Amino acid sequence: MNKSALFISTLNEIEGITQLFTKIPIATFDECFALDGGSTDGTIEFFEKKGIKVIHNIKKGEIFNIGSRITECEYLVFFAPDGNENPDDILILLKLIREECDMAIASRFMEGARNEEDDKLFPWRAWVNKIFTFVVRMIWGGNITDTINGFRAIRRTKLLEMNLDPTGFDIEYQMTIRGLKMGHIIKEIPTREDGRIGGVSTARSFPVGILMLKRLFTEFFIGLSFNQTYKK
Image 1 (tube, rainbow, N blue to C red):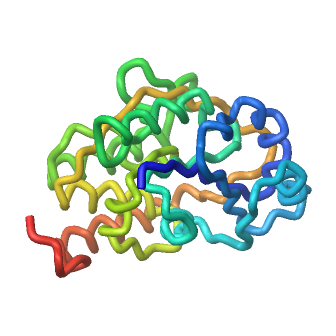
Image 2: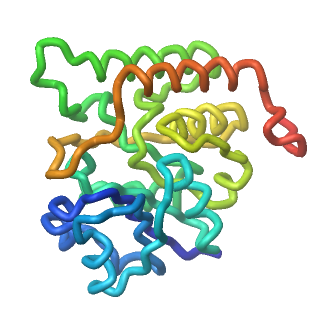
């Protein structure tokens, strides 16, 4: 099926979605869903007024699996209206998976991109992201510059092959690693990461870093056992 679906993930993002909604190309997609983590600030009511179906109480790591189950569209784009992700890139990602690749990632670190910490003297979070990406490239190859960013698009059939299992902030990392393991065609576009619009990030640097390390070691040792039917 050559249809496309857009998934907007939120958790108390009323300020962001209010400011960015008119910039999101919802009409381009055949389906649009809001995947909400339990908002209490009016985010859910906002979507309902706009006629967008809300899927309630979605954990961070469930976003991709839930998305693949509630639609039969082949081309899936995942976007968060928190100000960090540029809605102008949504259609660029969609075009890539339609025409050139299996998964497309909006990179904050490739040439022409901007990370929100670029103006800081010590961009600790950016450095850690780059280290995790460097390790992935050393082990599984490829030339990806941002293995962790959740602003991405993927073909549904390829997503289903991955058998993703986390329920936390390591989900995108696992997704990228398994795509490389399975030989999926992955491309990137440079994106501009601006500052957060309202709301509060639930990602805590140290716990998330530990989670990423565990994911890295797990994926290294399990190889392709997550999909017994897959043959390289």
